[in-house]
Image (tube, rainbow, N blue to C red; front, side, top):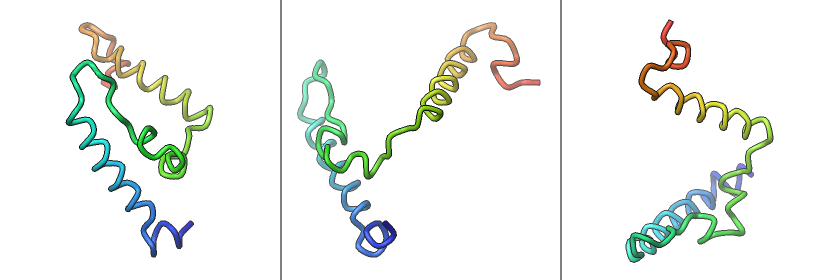
Length: 84
């Protein structure tokens, strides 16, 4: 992994390629069309670049997203906003 990520730079090349490609394709789309993502452009390498989340990471992400949403509500309790 170190060899392919570091010395050769495959991961950096794939990230740059996907960024340029999705940016170019999305610039040409209509506003009502679903934008291209890295998974659309490089499906075979997507899991290599962005490893899938574990079940625990998915639960933590959902919980933190919900907490952030609730803390933005006017009049939310101080516990939600992280204020003591």
